[in-house]
Each structure stands twice: as C-alpha cells, then as structure tokens.
Length: 482
Image 1 (cartoon, rainbow, N blue to C red):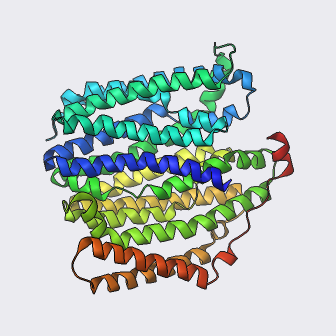
Image 2 (cartoon, helix red, strand yellow; image 1 turned 90 degrees about the vertical axis):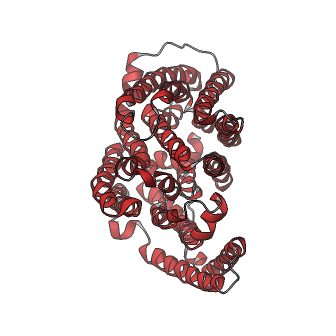
Image 3 (cartoon, rainbow, N blue to C red; image 1 turned 90 degrees about the horizontal axis):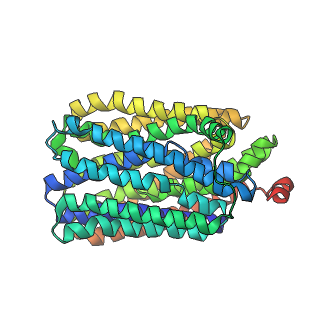
C-alpha cells in the first residue's frame, strides 16, 4: 500500500511541479501586466477543466472495480462521450466570458476561442490516470501524470521563449490537449479487451445518478480554486500578479492526502459495502494520524521559510506576496485525509457537494468585503476562514459515517502536540537564521536544516511515532474479492 501511494504521489507531485515551474519561469520572463494576464488565463483554464469533468473521472474507480473486465471498454466509451458533452459545455462557457472579460484591464477576449478548444480536447482525457490505477498499473498512472506535466510545461513556455507571447502559450495549450487526446484513445485500445461498445441508457443513468452529486462538488471546488483570483482581479486588479503567487499552495500536501485516499479507496468501499465500520474506522485513524505528522511539518516549515522561498523561486519579484502565501499555506493544515474519498466510499456524496458549495459561498461572502477592506491579504484570510468552516462540516459527516463524533474523528490531542512542536521548531529556526548574514539562499538553507532537525528530532524524542495507531491488515473478504 505504501509503495503504491508513493508512486501515485510522485506522479501527481511532478504534475503539480510542472504548473509551479510554469509560474516560476513566466514571472521571470514576462512583464507584470503580461504575467497577470497569464495567471488569469490559467485560472479560467483550470476552472473550466474542473467544470468539464463534473466528477465523471472520479467515478471511474468505483464502476471499473465492479464491472466485469469485458465491459470495461464499453464503460470507457460511455464515459468518453459524457465527458465530451460536458467539455463542450465548459468550452461554451469560456466563449461566453468574452463580454464580461472585455470590461477588465486584461486582454483575454481574443484568446478565449483557443482556450475553449484546448478544454474541448482535454476534458475527455481526464480519466486516463484513473484508468491506469483501475488496471493496477500504478507506475503507469504516475508516468502519465508526470509526462503530461512535462508536455504542458514545454507547450506553454516554449512559445513565450520563442517570442510568441501570451497568444503563443494559449495555442500551445491546444497542442498539448490534442496530444493527450491521442494518447488516451491509444491507452483505451491497449488496456481493454474488445467487446460491445454501444452504451445502454440504464448504464448511463446509473453513472449519472452516482456522479451528479459528486459533479456538483467538483464544480464548486473547481470554481473555488480560482475564485480568489477572480475576486482580486475584479476588486483589486493591480494586485492580481502578486496574489497569483501568494495563493499558490505547496502541492505535495493535498497530493499526499488524495493519493493515500486513492490507494485506500477500494478497501474503504469494501468495508462500507459489507458493514465493516470498525475496519473502516481503523483505516481512517491510521491514515489521519500519519498524515498529521507530514502536514504539520510541511505547512509550518513553508510558513517560516516563505520570505526566502518566494525570493528564490521568483527572483525577488512581488515581495508583497509573502503574507498572502503564509495565510493560504495554513489552509494545508486541514489536508490530513482525503475527506471526499472517504465520504464517496461511504456513499455519502451529498455531503461532499454540500461541503464544496459551503466553501465556495463562504469564500465569496467573506472574500469580497475582505478584499475591499484589505486587498489581497484580506482575500487570503477569507480563504483560510472558509476552508476551516468547510473542514469542520466534512469532519462531522465523516464522523457520522464512521460511527464516531467530531471530538473523536481526529486525534486532536496528537494534532495539538505536533503543531506545538512544529511552531516551536519554526520559531527557533527563524531566530537562528536571523543571526546569519543577509543572504537569501543561506538563510533559506539554515531555516530548512534547523527546522527539519528540530521537528524530526522532536517527533522521535517525544515518542510520537510509538503513539500512532497501527495500520490494520486487510479484511480476508477484501483479499478474496481482490
């Protein structure tokens, strides 16, 4: 399980790292106005991909795990057609943004048709890594994510390096999406046996019924990811370039949570399906306790290292992004589990979309006045508050599914001890680095070394590892069915 989770995590880390590298390079290459335009383009693109998916790719593991192998190709064709339809809807929404964006200081109207075409090509391929996971090709799934990230990085940055500017980068996205489309079709033909291809209406209705609540969740989550940038673009447009950097979250933490959840998904589904609630709770407790150690260390470490880290990555541009980055990094502290995956396994998809819409509406309700009062710093604080509200709601629903309570579903005492340890290590690292010469790389290295040594040493010295709940062995029924 650990090896598979690490492989999935590695692939997703490389995918997110590709997006981060795009930002790092373009901030250095482009003028502030051009970078702000690219940041807005990428936020619209990312939201459209999420809207186009509508939860259909995430449903693939559930259905492929239940269908006979001979039915896999028909199910994939069915999913491909549904994603093509939702992708066309997302592309149409992008084209409809023309009149709205034409009133902003960002010149996007002439780029929207190319952006819509890229979305139309990419959305039907979103299930590729999950198809590979369903076929037990974990390394292949990681390779797909990593290869896609490299291709996207090249297709976006090379046109700018060749002097084609922002339009060239958007056209490069179209080329990237077209290559993905060809790769996905080839993958389906290679991995699935021949069989009937015509989808049945009953199968479509079943998939739609399962996916609809999840799709509402994905829709809200996708919009929420970009909503902060859109609010800043509308009410504090001069700060958009800096906020696009400040709102960047360290990708490894959410990836670790979702990767662990993906690996546990079939086991959790088995437990809930067969009424093995105690077994499901033991899986949850073991995963959450271990993720707490990782999440607290990475999040607090990035907060203390933020001034030097952003200076190294972005060449000293946008120093005002440090505080928003620190605030949004604190959002990572709730990423101690794949909350949505756990609720999907329990069959409580309604709570997922309710939580996602709670987050979206909270971000909007808190973000607009906060941005008017305090600019991008206010927006970052609003995002943190909205994430906390959503987290508490999702935890209450998970506690209900596991036969637990909000006070018991997370080892709050362990979490408090670990956070106190991380905060103490961060303060000592900050003090020690302040004594060093004012050299960015030197101070960053000192902070990283001292914080890591103190945090890891404290974890071991305080016996935290011995207090972690054991990972339960798989249920014999799961092994037999697998």
